[in-house]
Image (cartoon, rainbow, N blue to C red; front, side, top):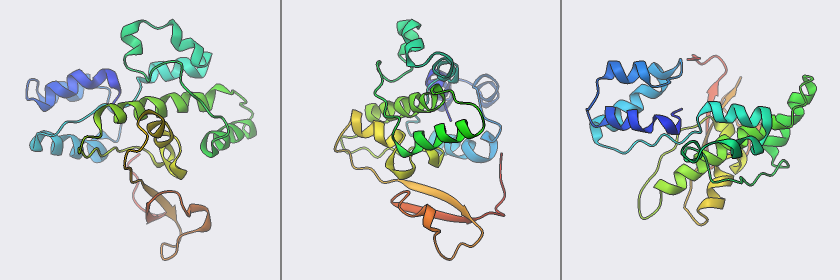
Length: 203
C-alpha cells in the first residue's frame, strides 16, 4: 500500500525519529491500514526490519490513465525516481490486463489506458522488489492478488528486471464452499488460500 515517495517518512518512523501520531497523520494511509497494514509496520519496527514502499505514487498512475505512458515523460527527474525506468514495457495481451480492458468495455468505458495505469503500478512494484531483493535476502511483498495472479502483473515485471530470482506467490480467493478449489481459481499461484465468501471484510 505504501507509495515510493512515502519512503522517507516510513524510514523516520521505523527509526524512531518521529512519533506514531505524526507518521499516521502525514503518510497517505488506506482506510484499512489499522487492521491490515499497521500490524506489518509495527512488526517491522519492533524487529528492526527494512520496510520498502514499492508502489508508484497514485498521482502518477493517474497521469497514465489520462495520457498513457507518454504522460510520464513530462515529469521531473525527481518524480521519475519513484517510478520504474521509462519507457516501460507493456503487453496488453497478458490475461489480467486483457480481462481488465474487456470489463471496462462492457461497462462502456473503453479507455485503453486503464490497464496501463495498472501496469505502471506493477512495473514500479516489480522494479522496487528487484532493487531490494537477491543476495540471500528474503523479501516479502504484500499486494492485492490481482497484482500477481497467474504469475502476471508485478511478478511479470519482476522477472523482467531480475530474471532467475526465486519467487513464490500466494493468492487468496473467496468461495461459497472451501473444501475444493473452484476451477477458475486453479493455478493462480504457488499457494492458494481459500476463504469463505462470508468472511469479514475490512474495506
